[in-house]
Image (cartoon, rainbow, N blue to C red):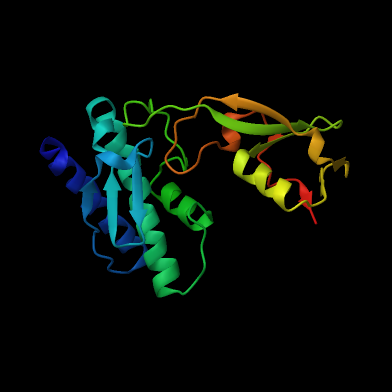
Length: 204
């Protein structure tokens, strides 16, 4: 990927300099490593130590990789450096700190890309999920891991909107093809507004 090295480095240095100037700090630009084994993941940040990019996406999505993905990962690094390392705060990977940095750069704080994940080197496999539609119209979706955890350690669950108890037998199994992603399999924006991802129902 030497043909893109200069463009990546220019974006990297420029973005880090801009964030340093805004916050009055001196974070060093992290090294960028091309990792063809990232699969469906377009980029990954490791604290503020390094960034990995998926070279398989550069052939078709070079402009978007440099415009969106490189700053996306830099914002992860800077959030870790400024909020966690310097200010000793606990932050979420795609929390408000990261989102605010993206907005400062006038970029959408999207967690997921929309690239063809087969071009990233990933093998497509059907994913098993479980859904439940409440009488109030709210639909919940669970990963197979979370469902299996509930089977092993039964807990009472209910809809937070109408307080209807959700019995374990009410969850319906279905399969989907995996969606494109950078950090997560599925995000709320990929569904209608009335669909939750399983973290919206009550548990005890």
